[in-house]
Length: 83
Length: 83
Image (tube, rainbow over all chains, first blue to last red; front, side):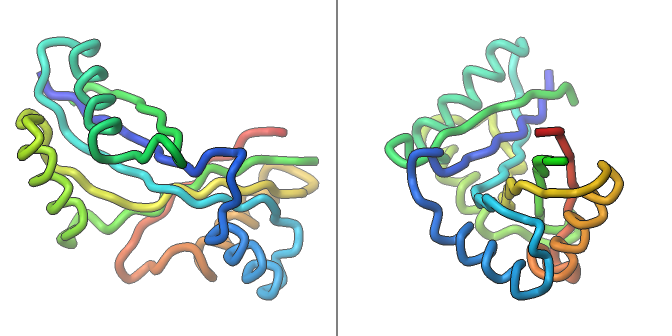
């Protein structure tokens, strides 16, 4: 069966996020001063061919651990949808 | 009130995504051959101070249009949660 995985890879909460900080400042300069705590990570979508949803999730997590996320600095979460 | 916005900025479906293509090939080289159609974008979280959820959503969309997304090449979606 076909599944679509939506994966978010975000910098760990304990770490500074200089890119987010820079964007935060730029938003303030643009007049959007009610916005704070900007953090920027990656959003990845991919299609999986798997026998079951469990197998698809396992595959997506393996992809995250092996390539998509650097677990020293980043956390990931995986959401799966059919089709 | 405080809201948290989760924003995804993805390359438009009509456009090639060379980063996604490269990751797709790397996943195949790692043995994950059942994964395809990898597309990579940004995931942004930020906190908003707004009077209502509608106002918060408007503010988040303004931030996307002004800074976070390049609408010539990217599409964005915004999800809001309280707190």
